Length: 199
Image 1 (spheres, one colour):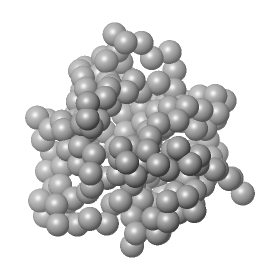
Image 2: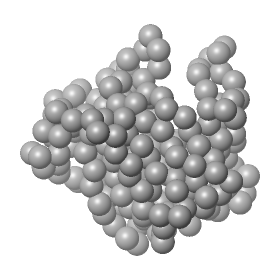
Image 3: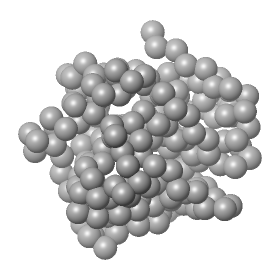
């Protein structure tokens, strides 16, 4: 079974600042394998344009976001993506053990931002009137990412912080607290996001 331990500092930062970051979440080989798997899914047309809102309010809105997504569930066959699932499950358990968050459910999504300046405008991950998403965790799958590629994750904390989506970098933040956005991306940008909820 995959195991993961969070440091006391990471737990404190999540509570006090609302986020923490960590390098080498998957390990270099696993991260590169996951990037290759993500690229294969994009080439196969497995991702669909992402919308905003849920249910009857769901719609496509290029002014808000321009990425494509697919959900990664128990039916995932690719070994590299199953390893990512296992690692995010270990993170959920570590958050519960270290921060007593009572996280019970995980949603896992692969997102691809094309190299056309694609963005996702400022938002929170907890939907209006529904606070069940408590923690967001994102791992980036972008080898040889350069500043000119843009695509930073901007966290609206004090002061605002831009994080480059470099290979195997993890960012964890409180879904209902931290507003964030994806800045224009000028290279293909891959990310896998886990949302953890308490029900």
